[in-house]
Amino acid sequence: MRLLRVGEPGRERPALLDEAGRVRDLGGVIEDLDGAFLAADGLGRLADLRAEELPILATEGLRVGPPLRPGKVVCIGLNYRDHAAETGAPLPAEPVVFLKASDTVVGPDDTVLVPRGSTRTDWEVELAVVIGRTARYLSSVDEAMGCVAGYAIAHDVSEREFQLERGGQWDKGKSCETFNPLGPWLVTADEVPDPQRLGLRLWVNGRLRQDGNTADMVFPVGEIVRYLSHFMVLYPGDVINTGTPAGVALGQPDPKPYLVAGDVVELEIDGLGRQRQEVGQA
View: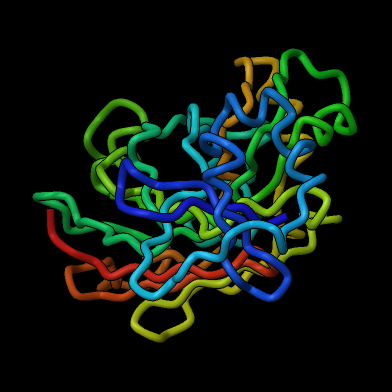
């Protein structure tokens, strides 16, 4: 299934993308796509629906929001070999973990805002993992994969000065408003048989900047979920951003092409859809 939420910010309604690409209204079936829905085996209940019996929504002018209301957003840094190399960092022995404020999550085509005082706002296309059942002290990768509800595209926007030069942890450069476009869809795990064979790409103003594959991850999805479950409880609706491949502005020669107002960023992951954001100024 490909699930999404449509409508104005704060007033989104759940929907389903059918096999013909039409948006079907789930508002009469479920209240929302969130942790409570996932915890109550909502995906299992939707599997029995006949999509053709759901109302079709007119999509002209219809905003696509994030595909679920997330719990916490957990992020993995330096998780692609080529990205670690371009930043001059050694490969981590264990996953590098940081948290991102959940209110950074916006729709896949919403405006991304450069923070006030920022000169180093950067892009990062990432595979997002959505947790579907509580994960606590998991003992194996297989057990961890059983806790994955599905996948989405995340744009882990970052402000590098705030992240690296302003003291403290990375969160300062990761939690600015609009810094996590998510979606367009939550694609259920059964539709993604191997999350380690997905191409992911990002363009800035039409120029291809990132062109990687999840096969290059240092720590694959199952190991990330297993590992995190020993440091925090993962709940249904939590989102994990799993890292980015090479090609970010930070890794480019000077002058580095950081984002400015007026830029257009487009990103995609095989089978998970596409995002497009215009960059504005906070």
